[in-house]
Each structure stands twice: as structure tokens, then as C-alpha cells.
Image 1 (cartoon, rainbow, N blue to C red):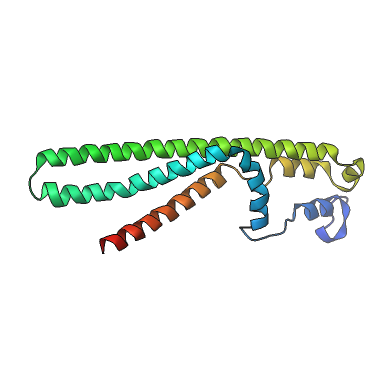
Image 2 (image 1 turned 90 degrees about the horizontal axis):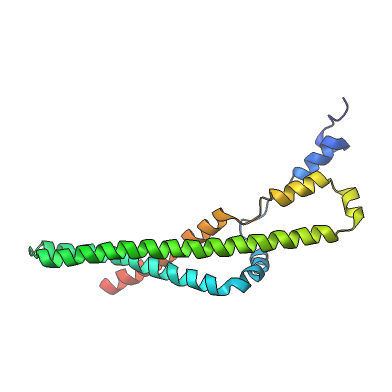
Length: 184
């Protein structure tokens, strides 16, 4: 049968299947991270703002349970309605501040992420334009274009969200441990 050869026997199907196999590596590669940091470096100010907003959001997230504790221990137990109203207002401001800090952080991370992706794509396009003609004799152009457009290793919104959540969770845990040690 023409064109129906198996992966090990050449032919169009075998070539395409050979190109589709990607080597499985570790989820984290420090060398790749260092290479990507070059693209983030021009946007370090916005990344610093996002980091500060992450610290603010983490601090306010940890403040909310403390305010609830104060409301219960000092104001509800003693019947102090005025103090309870003040704590409720403080808690509402705490939640609103957490919301604003989180929105700002996500905005800056998304902005930087989009600029980094645009730069990566432009550099990749420039690289493809400078390849010798012989490259296209040995590589199927459809596979090359498909990898450029649909690359599995391209960072995107999921990467940004995962980074944000991971750093935020680590800071929450760190500050909870510190707060727990201080109370003991």
C-alpha cells in the first residue's frame, strides 16, 4: 500500500511519525529558565511590581483570619458592637485590598508574559528566515510550521498562572509558619 509504511520503514508516514516523536525530559530545566530570563530582563520593573503586589496580597490574605479571631475573641465574646463593626469594615477592606492586589499582579504578569511571547515569536521568525535553503530539504516545512505555531514548550497563560499560584502558595505557607511560631 502506497504511503502506509510503518514508522520504522521510511516513506512519508514514517518520516512524519519520526518528526512527531519528542523526547520526554524533566519538567524543570534550569538551562531553559536561564535562557528565558533574558527575555524577562527588559521588563524587570513590572515583574518587581508584580512581586510586591504578590507580597501585599499574601499579607492581606493572612490578615483576614487574624481579624476574624479578634472579632470573635474581643468583640463578639464581650458584646462590643462598635468594635465588631470596625473589624467588619477592616475585614471588608482587607478582602477588597486582596482583590486589587491580585488583579494588579495578574495584569502585570500577563502583560510581561505577552511581551515575552511576542519577542520569542519574533526571534523565532527571524531565525527561520535566516536558515539556509538546505534546511528545508531535510525537514518537512509543515512540521516546522506546526511546531512554531503549536509548540508544546511555549510558555503561555497556564505557565503564568502556575508561577503565580506556586509563588503565592509558598509565601502563604512561609508566613503561616512564621505567624504560627510567633504565636507559640
